[in-house]
Length: 198
Image (cartoon, rainbow, N blue to C red; front, side, top):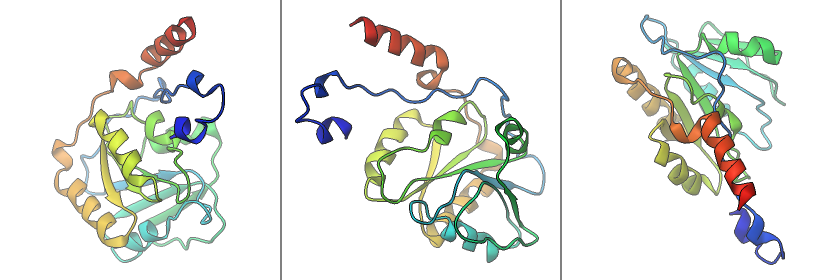
């Protein structure tokens, strides 16, 4: 997409792209082995570019599923028994909290082709990662992410989110994921070095 955007720039042929590597610390094992399954979202939720409201509404209307949010936004989220709001958390503390999540939730931006870094950063986990699709570039991004055979997708509306959550809960014993070689720090580093040597 960026190559098309800058195709008139005389340096566009020098542009390249590589994904963020996953994190090497805090290996997060799948812990869906208890009655309470916690879906966790970490990041900002400014409604101008990321829409969390459908996700929140699903949990508001279904008290038997649990949502935990870490981050700040420009609207208030009312806590209830199954919705916990932590606010902004220091980076050195967030991994500890994320280790308690059973499912990691990522939401695409409404008006951008940028893929949230959390999608890649958390891919060292054995946990399911639910990617909520949104925005005009959602189909392109989904097609790109599908190559990793790593993510569960749904649309950013209450019905689709609820169906994805139900699927995860129903199949919780079979949802185990392994690290993708293409997202490993070693692979990413080698790609950058080789690209610079071209």
